[in-house]
Amino acid sequence: MKPVYFFPLLSLLISAPLVQATERKPNIIIVFCDDLGYADIGPFGAKKHATPVLDQMAREGMRLTDFYSTCPVCTPSRSSLMTGCYPRRVNMHVDEQNLCVLFPAARKGLNPDEVTIAEVLKEQNYSTMCIGKWHLGDHPDFMPTNHGFDHYFGIPYSNDMNRKEVPLPLVRDLTVIRDSVQKETTITAQYTSEAVKFIKSNSSKPFFLYLPHTAVHLPLVPGEKFKGSSKGGAYGDWVQEIDWSMGELFKAIKTEGIDEHTLVLFTSDNGSAREKQGSNLPLRGRKGRTDEGGMRVPCIVRWPGRVPAGSSSGALTCTMDLLPTAAAISGGKGPKTPLIDGKNIWPILSGKSKSHPREAFFYYQMDQLQAVRSGDWKLFVAMDSKKRNWGKPEGKKALALYNLAKDIHEDNNVAAENPDIVKQLLAHAEAAREDLGDVDRPGKGQRKAGWVEQASPRLLK
Image (cartoon, rainbow, N blue to C red; front, side):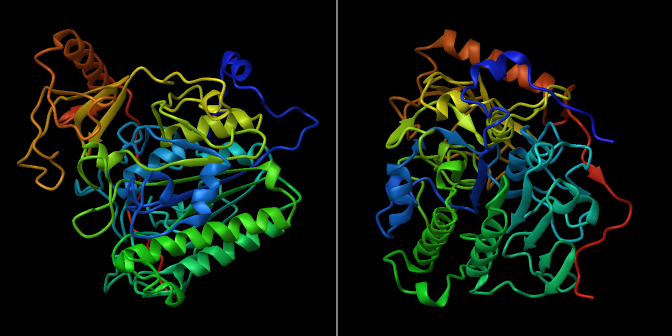
C-alpha cells in the first residue's frame, strides 16, 4: 500500500484560491512536448514557424520565462513531472546500464511505490489519462495504468527507439494495437483525437489529461497536411501541427462549456537538439547539456479568471512544481513524506507572488551535479568531459559564475569579482550532494527505482 501524503497546513492557507467543498474542482491539462526548444514557439521568439494558438494562449495566460526541466534528456525529466522530485531522488537519472534514458525491454522503471501527480488527483476523484510518450518503463508494473492513470494511449518510448526485438509499439492501456509506428505521420492527429474524446467524455466531472507529445523528437514526422507549411522544414511543420493540436483541445473545452474550469499548461521536456533543428535562443547550449538551452524550456499556463491574462513571471519554477501545485488547486493532499522537491507555485500563477519559490535549483547531467542556480546567479561546479562528451556545457569550466539577469547567454564568467556568491552557491551544491548524491556518491535522500527480474516489453500478441 502506498503511503498517505499531506500538505502542511501553511501551504494550503497561502495557496488561495483553493477549491471549496461546494466548488467544482478544476480540470488540469498538461501538454509536454519532446525536444521543443525555448524559442520554438511564437510567445518565446519563434521566427521560422507560426504558432497562433499558443500566441493566443499566452495573451490569455502567463508565460513562465524561467521554467526548467530537471534534466536535459527524456526519461529523467518525465520522472520529475510525475513525482515532484529530482530524478536522482527517485533514481531515474540513468538506466540499468548507466545510460541516460530507458530503452525498450528495460528491467528498470519508475517505482510503483512513488506517488504520482495522477495518483494525487485520483484521490480527488479525477478521471485520468496519459496520451503520448511515457518513457518511464515498459513493464506492466511501470506503465501509466499502474501509476494512477485510468487509461493510456501512446508510444512508451522515444520516436527513434524502433528495435528488431521490440518494434516501436502503439499501445492502449497495456495492449499493443500496432507495432513499427516509428514513421507514422498521423501520430499527432491520433493523440489529438484521443485527447478530444477524453475531454468530451469527462466534461461533467474533474479530469486530468497528461499529453506528452512524440513531437518534435527525431525522426520528424509531421502530418501530411502540415508538410511544407512552415519556413523551418519538417521541424517547423511539426511545431505548427502541435499548435493545431492545441487549438483542437481549446475548441473541445470551450464547446463543452468548461473553459473557465480548466487549467492548461504547455511546456517541453528539455531544450532543442539545435544542431539538427530548432532554437533555444537567446539561451546557450542544447539538449543533453546543463547550459540554459538544455534545461530552461518554454512554458505557458492558462486558466481564465484565475491566471492573469497577458502576464509573465521570471520566478524560478520547474516541472517538479506541477504535482504540489495540482494538489493545492484541486483541494487535495500532497506529499509531505517521503520528501519531494517541488513547490506549490499557485501564488505565482495566480499573480499574487513574484518571489522565487526555492532557494536553489540544481542542474544534473545523468549522475553528475554540474551547476546550481540561486536567484539570478548560476555557478558551474563540475563537468567530467571524459564521461560526458555530448553532455559537457559549451566552453565552460568548473567554478564559472554567471548573472543570468544580465547575461542570459552565459558569456561572462564573473566568479573572480563575486567570491561571496561563489561560496554561497558552493554550499548549496554540497547540500545537494549530501542529499541527492553526485558521481560515485550516493545521496542520503535517494530512494530506489523500480526493478523487475524479467523484462516484459509491450509486444504485439
